[in-house]
Length: 303
Image: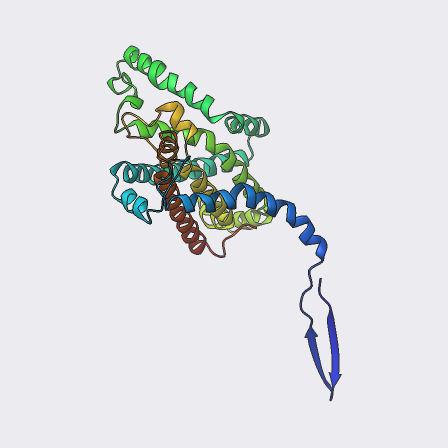
């Protein structure tokens, strides 16, 4: 809350603005959330970073080893492979999810019949547990599709792609996108419905085709929503875990092991300090990616 004082001196009007004063009640509202965030997020993170500089196994005594764990992580093929898979998987899935969701949103906001019912159907995957979805698709990939491929004489489908180290990631991308598209779709629908109809009416009068309207009107006006979906997508897919566990459990071998799986398995085998160093590196890289995304999309926020 701020006040403004006007002073007249020698015929000149000067406006002096007092410094903004925040009501104490706002701090009172902020305090519970800040305390919970500190106890649940900040404090464990600081403790984890501290122990990443030790040789702790999670319990018992420990001693400082400096940056030994970080140096080892940079030269560990398993860690590097996990990072490579996670970032590649996230990039491909973000592109696939946003393209599919945007096209569906355009169709579900056009003048078609039963679009309300279709919207309800398309958002169903969003409310189903990821691990359940993974087990259902695992059955489809390992049993139903090979059976269909054998019956139809399609060699490519006769073996499960989840058993192929070079193709298993495709199955993970498909299942992850299937679950992620509904949430992205709802955001795009909100963005498309916020565009005034008069804009399209004017474009029709000027003779613009539907393709021209899509590329020169719709896309620029929903650019802020694209930013939101890309940032949320990267945040979610970088932390991929449950669907990968349900589909391949990181296999064949370690071909589809995400960085989250690597860290958690390290905790389970007593490699606490080493995996905390890996988690810290992952956090730093994720922050850098978020900063780059925000800098590249500055001024395009939908909010």
